[in-house]
Length: 398
Image 1 (cartoon, rainbow, N blue to C red):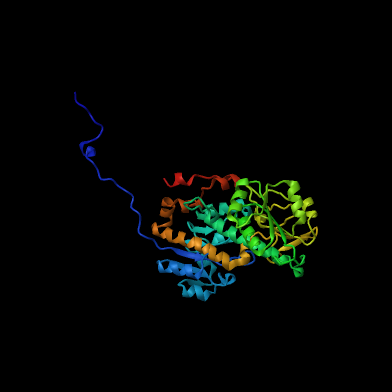
Image 2: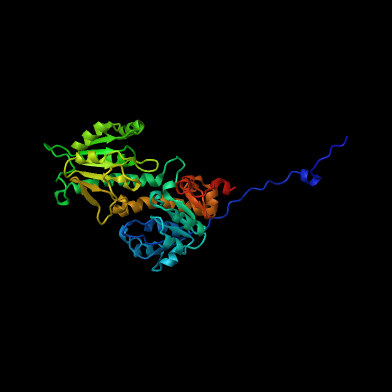
């Protein structure tokens, strides 16, 4: 009996396997526009990072004055190999745009179709129109907050949180001065003088950095958080034992009544939970200082309101409230160095893969930061939040 086959004789002969070959290293053309200095004083890349990119064969176009508020003059960028221009339109016409703040709707209009955008997202401050504008231009957008490294950590958020934690103690110290309306207390362990009392709500990275800074200055610290594992991790990371407690209203109220400074550093799912009520603030000492680090996520003090760098504080019930949402911009050079150290290696990796699209296909770390791919929303959380259609990026890349 003859056996028939649906394949021809030539088809049954072993064939060479065809594998995808990565493209040669590509050249990036990066545009860095000037931020709105009223709210943002940082810049994405330092002159040293620009020099590293230029030596690798890439082009960098920077709007004149972009680094001025971070103490980087145009001359330093020019000497590093960057091109300097006064024309904002030219910068936004580059294939790749690097920003710290997310672009405004007007800035999106200046971008060319199919541009690659790298910036923060600040989801809680965005509106539906922002994502619709990106989709209309078929923009591929990557946000720093979503970038996850191979160890499952978020390097950008970690670095910014460290700066915010240290800054919160320094800012509180400034507002404790008599000249700033404070109680005239010094953050320090002076012999024979009772130390300053600080209450920190939260036990994450911001709180850890704040606690370490406060301990170094010699103040008494009390930390409250409902996550017992975070409290244990915090204790292990410190050189000495401190007071820690889960958030119980009676205990927290008593601590707030006695403290000189209260720092809020709690991050919720959609917004920070209100853990300190208006009544609890009323019972605090006159001249005490509240630093609500999580104000950009709603804040955990009921009396907190968003303020600006020009007018950073307001006083309620005799308590000074600091509610600036972008604390790290106050220390623009330190923040710029931290951001640049994170972004520049990713940019070099992008070129090594041949093109950005190839890098997105090959590199899970880079893919984790993408929330808009060629005008298609690929982040489920954003889609549900703004009631927008979204797709899985892994299905698009197949």
